[in-house]
Image 1 (cartoon, rainbow, N blue to C red):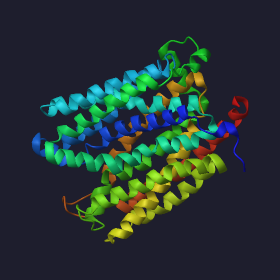
Image 2: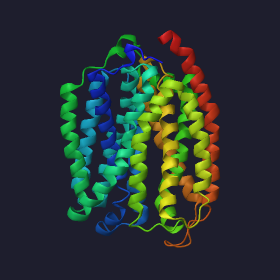
Image 3: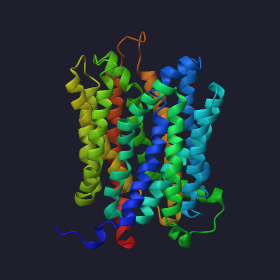
Image 4: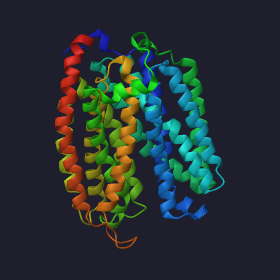
Length: 412
C-alpha cells in the first residue's frame, strides 16, 4: 500500500527521535553499569552484598518517588524546559557518583541521580506522543527503545573496560561528560513543546495528580504497565547467575550472550515498531506475548546448554520482549489526553519502577541457591510466574487498545 505523505519523517523529527534515543541511552547505561561494577565496588568500598543491593535499589525507588512528585507539575510547563531541567540534574548526579569517595557518598549520589534520571523517560514518551500521531508511534518507539539494547551492547562492555583500567569512578564521569555535550545540543536545537498548555486546566498539582491517577481510563493503562514491568524485572537480576551456574556458560563467554542479544534487539526494535504501525500494535503485542511465554518456559527449564544455543534462545527471547515493549508503549501513549499526558507518563513510570523493585524482591524469594557456585533452584517455578503475568497482560492490553481505538477517530 502506498504511504501517505504525512507518514514521512521530516529532518527535524528524525533529529528529535535520535536525541530522545540518546538521552534514554545515557540514563539506562547509568543505571545498568552498576551491575558489572559490583565486584569492584564490593572490593574497593569494603561493602557487603546487602549494601550493594541498597545502592542499586536506591536509584529505582527514588526514581519512582520522583515520578509521583513531578506528576502534578508535568503538564504545567513546556516539555523541553522540563526535560532540560531534569537532564541537567541527572548529569550533576552522575558526576557526584563519579566523585564519590566512599559508600555513603555513593548511596546519596544514587538517590540524587534517581530523583532526576527517573523522570526523563516519562517526559521523553510524552514528547513522542505530542509530536507524532498514533500511526507513526510504533516506529518512533521502536527507535527510542533501542536505547535498552544499545546500553547492553555498548554501555556494559565499555563500562567494564574503563573501570578495569581507571577504576569504578571513570564510567560515571564519562557518561556525565558525554551527557553534558548532548544536553547542550538539545538546549540549542530542540524547539519548545508547549501545545498541551493551550488545553491545560488550572488545577492544583495535587488535584491534578489525583484526577490523573484515579481516572478510570488511566487505571486500565496503569494496571497493564505494572504487569508489563513484572516479567522483565523478575528474570533480569538472576540472568547471568543462571547462565553461569545452571547452563554452564563461563564468565568469559557471558559477554558474547549480552552483545549478541543486544545487537539483535537493536535491529528488531525499529522493525517491530514499523510492523505495529502497519498491521496493528495490539496484534504484534499478542503474537510477541505468546511467543515470549513459550521462550520463557523453555529458557527457565534448561540444564547445561552449548553457548550457541543459549545465544539463540536469548536472541529469540529478547526479540519477543522487544515486540511487547514497543507495541505496548506505543499503545499506552494514546490513553491520556494531551493536557494530562505528562502527569500520566510520570505516574506510569513511577509504577513501573516500584513494581519492578517489588518483582525483583519476589523473584529473590522464589529463587534459592545453596552456595555462590551452586545452581539456582526453583527457576522453573519463576518461569511459570513470569509466563502467567505475561498471559494476564493480554486482556489488559486489549482494554488499552479498545480505549485508544475509540479516541483516535476524534483525535484524527
